[in-house]
Every structure is written in structure tokens, then in C-alpha cells.
Length: 193
Ligand SMILES: Cc1cc2nc3c(=O)[nH]c(=O)nc-3n(C[C@H](O)[C@H](O)[C@H](O)COP(=O)(O)O)c2cc1C
Image (cartoon, rainbow, N blue to C red):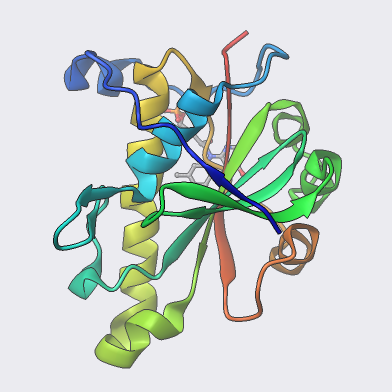
């Protein structure tokens, strides 16, 4: 399926300390969709390339192995973020937000948010080097990535909520994820109402 090249991330002049202070879990959103620039900036903040030469990313990763993949879910479909291309790859067309909401115990903000960023991970990537410590490292990386996205959202005038309560298998199925990836976190994001 198609590849959508993303615009460069926006350079927002917003004090980090203010973003930390103002971040709150937002669960009520205006209906308008996010711009491609906003989505590109959020995805870049989570897993974008910040050192082109060494292919290092915005979030730290044990051994720079990068086991996480970000997915974007919006009214038009499900898309995989490709950091090295700074692009989206279409995984599934059509609005799955209602099904995703059901898979997340019916939490209404998952249906109402114009977009949800899903953090998925392949623990085998990290386990090849770190064995039994792999899950610990993957979970820590999820926290780094989610926080970057949540703080970037504040700096963009947006808001989000990290969602950990969902049925793993159901979300996996709704998003058509590959078998080697586990769903780890959902972050519905929009303009605060
Ligand atoms: C690991 C984790 C899982 C969470 N899961 C959910 C969730 O499923 N649904 C939800 O509405 N909020 C969820 N939250 C958000 C918390 O409820 C929220 O962070 C907490 O109430 C503190 O409020 P604040 O984020 O505005 O500071 C989760 C937070 C964390 C860290």
C-alpha cells in the first residue's frame, strides 16, 4: 500500500518547563482533524531521526536497537511511521476508531480523538542482545517515547492521554499488526475542548 511522505517536523519555540507544567491527561477533544504537520511533529518527537549520520532517534533506546514502532490511527485509516523515510505507510484504510475504542474497554476518548498514536514493540529485537532484560528495556523505552509525544503535544497546543487499559489481542487485530509486534500503549491526541 501507499507511502505518504511527511513534512519536516515543526520547530516550536515553547519552553520545556512550561510543557512539563501544563501537561495534563486530556480526554475531551474538538472534532477537527490534526494537520499533517502536527502529526509529523508528534511522530518525529516519539521516534524520529535526530542524527542522520548515526541514525539515532528522538527517544533513547537500549543499545540503539529501536524495538518500537509507532502507528497513527485517524479517520482515514491505520498508518505505520517509518523513521528513516519520515513517512507513513498505509496499513489499513477506513476509520477503525470505534473498534479501537471497544478494544480499549470502551473508553470514549479513543473514539473521539482525531488521532491516536499507538506504540508497538518487537521484544525480540532487544532480546537478541539483552536476553532476559529485554522486556524491562522495551517498557522503559515506551515511557520515554510516550512522554516525548505528550510534551510535544502540549507545545503544539494539543493534548493527549496515555492509555494502558486495553485488550492486547483485540487492538492487535483491529490494527492489522504483524505477529512479532505487541501493542504497548495508546495515545489519543487532539485539540483540547
Ligand atoms: C501506565 C499508564 C496507564 C494509563 N492508562 C490510562 C487509561 O487506560 N485510561 C485513561 O483515561 N488514562 C490512563 N492513564 C492516565 C492517568 O489516569 C493519568 O496520568 C493520571 O490520572 C494523572 O493525571 P495527569 O496525566 O493529568 O497528570 C494512564 C497513565 C499511565 C501512566
